[in-house]
Length: 241
Image (cartoon, rainbow, N blue to C red; front, side, top):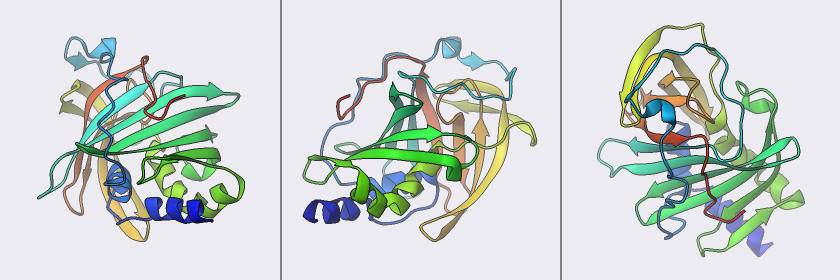
């Protein structure tokens, strides 16, 4: 029971305004571990020239072990935060995903064993297990009763893996540290996270693994997420496999 309470406290921190900021605000400060650099092997080969051609498909890359993306999150009057998504491994029809998020020196880590039946709809995601690094540095595995007790909180994190449907809106170039992505699909993404309504403009390109996101701006408070680097191989877990 004490462990369950600790997990709930670790997940139930201050709220925020968009998927990446949601994770950063909910998890920031729960660990003093340094930022993991194990997955930062290289950017995708498509980004070597600095310009990524316009999409030739409306389909995202299928999930595969080793994929990773790294973002910087900025918000007015706050120090930048780092946000990294990884696909650690495959387990049957599911994948282990890992999120590292927070400011330098205060990085939090959470893993999900997930089946994403429909990647455009978070409600279709089947969560089978989770791991979280608690404020005391211990890693807690969530199964059964513990997973059910924290499911509604964890669901808020899973929404960061949802991608918008492509091809129905305008297309624009997006210049970010990872390169200039030509003719990204532009989407207005609205939702409610922990009772807070959000409205973000996102630029998505199917060459980017996991979430396809290149850039996002939250219209409510100006929070911005930009892609720093990405890769199709080399992701390593901060929690261990």
